[in-house]
Length: 109
Image (cartoon, rainbow, N blue to C red; front, side, top):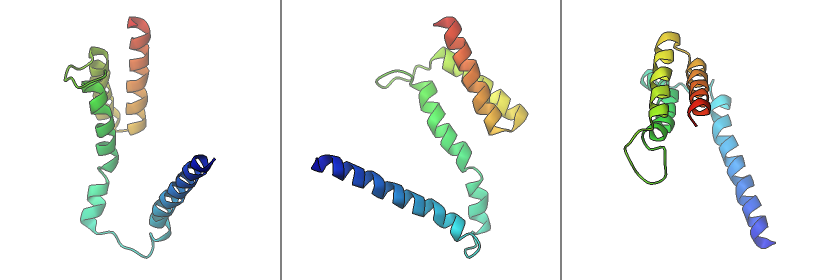
C-alpha cells in the first residue's frame, strides 16, 4: 500500500514539475527576451531530437550493441531523407518514412 502511494506521488510530482517548466516558457514569453543567437539555435532542436531518436534505431536495431544497420530501416531512412529534402516538412518526413517501413516490413516479414 505504501509503495503504491509513493509511486503515485512521484508520478504526480513529476507531472506538476514538468507542467510548470513547460508552462513557464509560455507564461513568461512576453517578459523575457531570448537572445537572437539562442533563437537561431533553438530552430534546430526538433531536427536534433528526431535525429537522436532515429539514428540509433537504424544503426542498432536489435538487442546488444552492433553497428550493422538493418537494410529495411536504412532504406527507409534514406527515403525519409529524400522526402525531407523535397518537402521540408517534418510531418511528411516522419509519415513517409514510417509508412514505407511498415509497408516493407509487411512485405518482407
